[in-house]
Image (cartoon, rainbow, N blue to C red):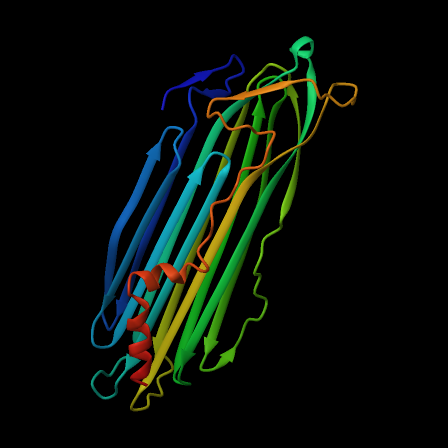
Length: 314
């Protein structure tokens, strides 16, 4: 997309821009590995709300895997979801090697825009802005298997907010990065420090120049994977089975101005605001209703039933 550039070298977008990328993929391993890839969804638009979705499912006699990924972006708001499920069955002696099923998703989205705080007679002078930004994440994981099986899960999410003004330079804020890595061995939980939620309200404070555009760039990312190994330890019994599921959700949105002051620190209430997108950054973006869990996307596609059926084999 075309952008104007200030003398400082900082870009001013000619229009707001939204983009999302979702990918669901996985692989199985019954010596040798056999990768499986589903459609990747990449979307980009100017100004309008944007939603992207991708999913995959695959199976054979000994393994089953499924992944789903969704991203939604609209002015000041990003919502990301990822869900994975994988199961494996070692039916000795039909195969002499362990069976692995791996499901993975990656999801990212971005929103950038520009707004101006018009202070009338204050234009051209430096002001101070305090705003809010909400970040939250949820994580649900399920494991079921025999003692001759092993599951590994890895989930992480990040949030990034960048505000910049040509007169005062750049301010970058980054939080989130809540990462959870879990190992299961049989029915034993080996890692218990599971973070369910990222920090809530971030307080953002920057110096800016009245009458000069302020750039807003919001970016979010989630990644999740489940790896299920049937009979990985070399001691196989006639039937070993493993099933693991993970749901990851991440929401971030602009939460409005908390205060505007002039260079002396005095509150400024008599000002106007305009933005390329038309969104009023003085107020909070309104999150759209979230699914109860990303796993519900898989249910809607009829994919979870395969996992339940395969568990019954054990």
